[in-house]
Amino acid sequence: MFEQLMQLPLFHGVSAQQLSALVEKMPFHFLKFNDGERIIDEGDTCTHVRFVVSGKVRVSMRFTNLKVTIEQTLEAPNVLGPDYLFGLDTTYPFYVTAEGECGIMQLRKSDYVNIVQADKVFLFNILNYLSRNSQRFTAGVLAMKQGSVTERIALIVSILTTQLSSDITISFLQKDLCTLLGTQRTTLIHALDILKDEGIIDYTTTQITILNLSALRNRS
Amino acid sequence: MFEQLMQLPLFHGVSAQQLSALVEKMPFHFLKFNDGERIIDEGDTCTHVRFVVSGKVRVSMRFTNLKVTIEQTLEAPNVLGPDYLFGLDTTYPFYVTAEGECGIMQLRKSDYVNIVQADKVFLFNILNYLSRNSQRFTAGVLAMKQGSVTERIALIVSILTTQLSSDITISFLQKDLCTLLGTQRTTLIHALDILKDEGIIDYTTTQITILNLSALRNRS
Image 1: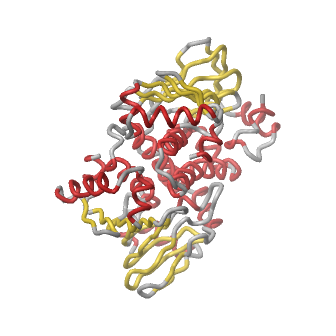
Image 2: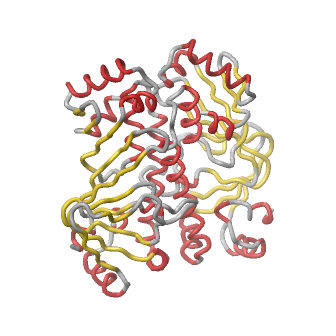
Image 3: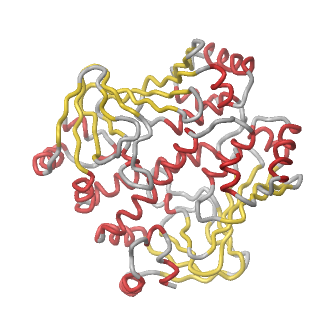
């Protein structure tokens, strides 16, 4: 497990031995969830840093005013919304469900802060992680060049998903997706058809599946 | 000056005495710039945390592929791009120019990291600051409801400006602004006219001035 966790940005530069020693010393909790069980509810306060250590979870985010939901799968090793530990709003804007059996390792925020303060490697990891988010949103906007429906989809997906996610889907009421993207139904379908032909997405009347996120970003 | 600096998010909860002691102890540098002088160039590496301690500066960000530039004024007390100290890309995506005489106080990144590590107040401040950025982008996207030109302008401005900025302008080649917003000239002008009538913006053929950013966000 520690070999796996070392791949995570928050544990970058930390050895498996160090991680193992840390887990022995600090009050980490290990939780098991069955398929379909809710792990985090929308609006829950983020009180712990939570890692997916086995299996995978599905993260779902809903638009407030429109029937549009974006979902992504996070496979182990992964981390759940570390950008909600601090800041103005520490409630998760998404809900998380187990996909099959999965294991979560969690640590209280105060204990995590102690680790971060005690060791510069952990400090740099969280500062890098949070800064990177902000930087990629700015860079994404500054790189816009077409204002196309495709570009708008790519921007929204980039902002609402993490870089270690897979199997991203957008479920929608067609009328609401058109509203969100500020486009007419025919323009939307035309754009989706092109993306489907290029193997970048697949879609039905109620759902878009992103098959190749980096191609979507470059294509836009 | 310390009374003023205490207002900044990075110094939240730090007393004027503590700040004064810190500035005596650590190798802070104080720099003076004349009107129009360049303080930071686009592409400069962020090696220091930099504060505007007197006067004001103009921050300009250019789109890579389109002739569109967004500018904002940061008055003292303020901080310059702390989200570029860490992360994947530590080069500033903007340039900064003095507006009138202005004073900058700066500290090397390594010294700032030592402060952050030594004192939980500073640690929480930077973690909160960075997390808040990420949270407000996500919240901004999830709150979209119209996909209108106005909403697109508001989202772009929100992502590219900080919360302590004033006098935000967007300079553009009209063709390129239409491309960026994915709209026709007539639709753009119609949207801008409504916003102008409501006192939210002013505009000419080459520039939009945001008069009321929070109204723009709510209006969209």
